[in-house]
Structure formats: C-alpha cells, structure tokens
Image (cartoon, rainbow, N blue to C red; front, side, top):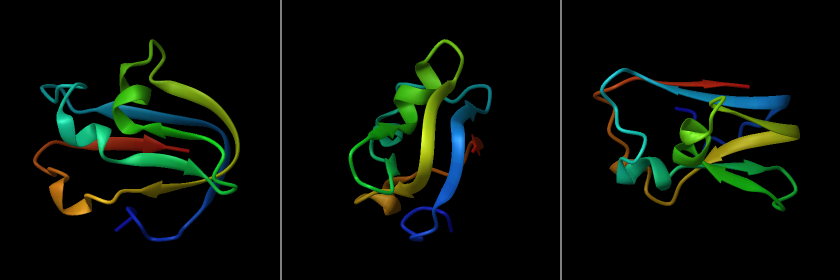
Length: 82
C-alpha cells in the first residue's frame, strides 16, 4: 500500500493517469494528496489528473497521504508516476 506508507519518492515530476471511465472530479480523488517531504507543498490526485499534461513539476521528495484512505475506490486504475 502506497497511501500513508511514509515512503518518499524523489523526482522532478509527478504524473497521474486515470483509467478510462474514472471521472477526474470523483470526490475521493480530492482526499488523496501528494505531499512534499518538507510539508510546504501538496497536490491532490484530482488536481494533477485534471491538469493539461496530467503532470506537475515537483522537484524533491514526495509521499502519498490521506486521512481518508479507506474511502479510496480501487475499482478503476490510477497510475501514479514519479
């Protein structure tokens, strides 16, 4: 499980691609955040997936966090690329 694992990935970019049919406005996508290790920056999966390139320029170390991990629906695939 990647959510709340305290695992940090170092990258210049993070990208989120959703399986066809998964609405980027699905409420649970706003409950999962990509957080910088220093805690100064964060993005929701929804905001990255809705961006024109599906990617954000994010130099540094990042983790996947959520206070609502049990709300995440795994019926459709979400590709998270660091």
